[in-house]
Length: 297
Image (tube, rainbow, N blue to C red):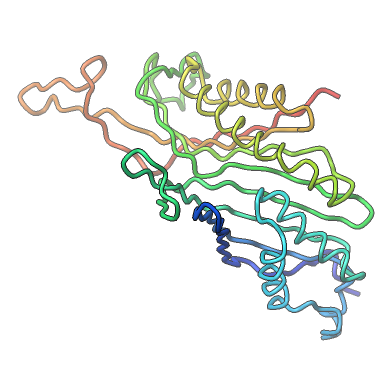
């Protein structure tokens, strides 16, 4: 007899914008998020018996996100995601796990005439600050903080050589190349026992976001990279050292390739090797390097 071996459902792409108005100073602060909610529990009969009595409607999930955003802080995203996730596991006893993802979009305050503007902002990149929270009945709250879409490039200071060469290898070795990638990195925290514990740790999430971002940028810029693999390991090591409550760090770094263009066909014009100045940016195919580095047990 067939049976449901796993099931979950939810509401995806819930767009939320919240503004905080400081009446005394006239300064306004804005946060824009995309939220996803997925629920698991005793919901098998909704699949096997058309029993809708166990379903929390996905529109209810959306409305819940709006209401909780009105009633609670939405920053840091780790705290808001925990607030939403624990709401569902606490409110509906047949729901045993809730996964909430929050993507925070960039709105950077404008600077005009050397002064921060009180209510005007610009989106200065596609980078997002993300949080993924899983609240499980009797097991606490798991949190992964993340940075995604951080596009970086350096025009030198990277190399790639001494790799395996055989009859399938065409790639030449290089001792100086352009290195570019779109950073997707995250760090998973030790499990929290309650929402109150997450709330108490809220300043730590903001501090670690800044530290993780700075470590990523500084290491990328300064490291004389022998490979993307080795550079990302150095990033992971430093984040683990900076955050004792983090269990593991993960990176996913796609190569954004820039190829030299041979222009010698045009009157012997030199544009390769040491003479290379004009390159052709590539979109695909591309290398993709990933790793997870965990703390010693």
